[in-house]
Image (cartoon, rainbow, N blue to C red; front, top):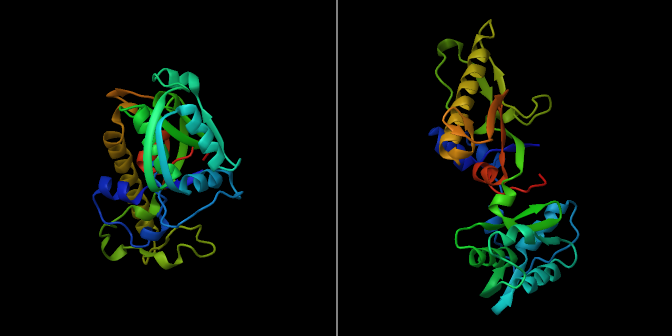
Amino acid sequence: MTTRISLVVAAALLGSPVLATAQTLLSRPASVDRLTTSSHEKPVTTASHPKETVLALLHKRVDNLDWIDVPLEEVISWLRDESEGQVNVVPRWSQLGRANVNSDTAVTIRLNNTTVAEVLNELVDQLSADGEVRYRSAGNKLIISTGADFNRKMVLRIYDVTDILFRVPDFGQDAPSIELQRAGSQGSGGQPVIRSPGSSSAGGEQVEQYIRTRLEELARKIQRVIAPETWDTPNTEGRGRIEVFGRSLWVYNTAEVHEQIAGRFSIGD
């Protein structure tokens, strides 16, 4: 699946202005781990996509919780009740056991005017001070497990970053024109339309080479800044890979790394 890279991440890594149109094209929801909503109530309903059902549960408002030494198994049951049977809540007990967490592990949670997501945030914070216990969505499942468990699975994702790349260099009199207003028109393939005023295609070729150079620069900076130990490079022995193909970045890494690159991530994406 092709997705958009985070506007904030790309701007910070590239250190250059981004296209104004990217503000709307690249807007993404916040991380699953920090979803909130201002509405009074957002009930869980059958959604058109399983992932939307999980998001509806995470957004759901919770007026009041006053739990004192409640076993984790009871919290799991509460989550299932809150989902009204629409979401499969799956604790991976064998993996949680490695983090010294089991069905009898007690938690104390006192929250008012909150969301299910914030309840989960508080839950996993209490279960592991080092952040090892986490949750992820996968289809219509909400999985509670450990970082080591989630990071066993490597995921390939394609990021279209054309719209956020660039400050176009000065090509002189042969500079091509880039028609952003036609980027979404029929026949443009959703990409900016590049037209060279010269008799040759040199301007367009320069733009393509410039884009590739910027993509390669972005790929190197991602590897240096985001979880550098996870990449397969001459200096590290990780399993992650990142390649430039056309105007996209092909990234093969864990769900956690994808979240750092582009925000909220579902294992089932």
